[in-house]
Image (tube, rainbow, N blue to C red; front, side, top):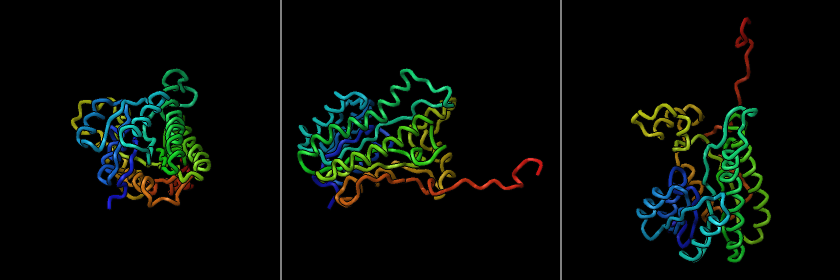
Length: 271
């Protein structure tokens, strides 16, 4: 039997990358899915491909009215809400800490990747508490576990997502609602496009470029794929994980199990 038969899910950032891979897997496993994203063309195309099993909703997760509408759409169109996957995100502001911009770009980074998770939990909870069940999954990052794996603000936000998840999990547990976060390692998706500026003329998909660049990052010897995260999301959305809540789960090919190589005396110049 499909693992999500009869369940209804929302996937934010569901039009591309990890989100799109998760949407397709959830549908194959029997779920009805709301694809929530600001990428309208890609979202509508994916929903059309999946026919009656998915519907697209334009959703800027930093705006409460958009988040409320996507939750209401799941209930009005499919009858309930069993899983919310807070997955929308991007790299956000970067650079050295003394150069961190504190204007619109900073606000957008915080709004999408942290406020959006808070709003998703808020509006999913009002539905899930009433029905007495549900699973909330949020995309955190290995950058929230270990330093040096992402931009400063991004890393801080992802650590915050993990802390928020643990806190909310305690409130929702008596209602049989679970909350967990997934911490991906280096996943070959379009999120890395800003790192490849100047390569626009190269006729190679971004994902293919990143597979080659990321493979040596992980002890397991390859880059991560959207399917790796989608498979974990499937486990957390399904009844197979009914005793798992308040956790952050690294899906990182062993990346956070590593420790830096100790400096040897022979590495020091002049010795």
